Picture 1 (cartoon, rainbow, N blue to C red):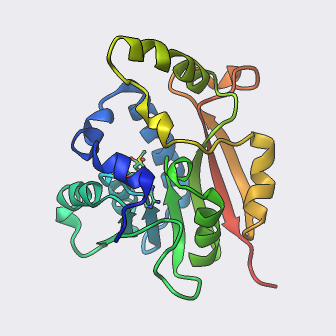
Picture 2 (cartoon, rainbow, N blue to C red; picture 1 turned 90 degrees about the vertical axis):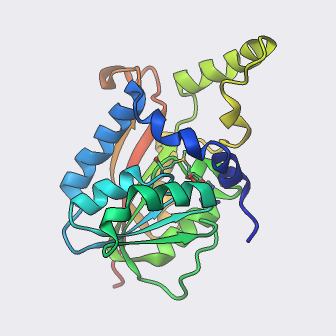
Length: 231
Ligand SMILES: C[S@@+](CC[C@H](N)C(=O)[O-])C[C@H]1O[C@@H](n2cnc3c(N)ncnc32)[C@H](O)[C@@H]1O
């Protein structure tokens, strides 16, 4: 199988991905997701962790009683996830593929889909969200993070990147692959196109406190969409 571009990039950093969760910003992002899992994940549900990386968030879903399909395009990330989740053999399975073209045929397979820091890396974000809308059960939940347009931290990193490169380091190389960004005002319509209703939206930023998000856009929006029930 051809590895999608964003997944190939992550394949090359799979060995160090887990260590990023030791950083303050990643710890804060993990807490944001965990607090949503506490509210929305129910024991016995089946969740798809789309772009699971090394499985850090999959393990949090499992700890809340979910069964998880850990899905990623990067073989090395998936191998790291298998190692990390080896104690949960009966409640987790692994699949390699392209998030824009999922292998499940038909519809209505999952109670929930988690998509953390993935949609910005695919070639066609609409194809990813269309697939999510297809594989969710009616009334199923999507928890997704999406980078915001005009994010202060991303704008500063983009400006600093060429300067830092002069000194021989490409610190923000992920911008070669991380392309999709959205305005908070556009999220509702974007989800509606694939039959998902926006149920919750919050800003996440490693540095900027929430009170300042209206004037200093945060790095990410964490959104919850619910699939409309068929009438
Ligand atoms: C930034 S990492 C996030 C990993 C994990 N969700 C987390 O939050 O720790 C992005 C992940 O998406 C995967 N990915 C990128 N493009 C993909 C694609 N087209 N299909 C499947 N996985 C993809 C990468 O391999 C990588 O593991």
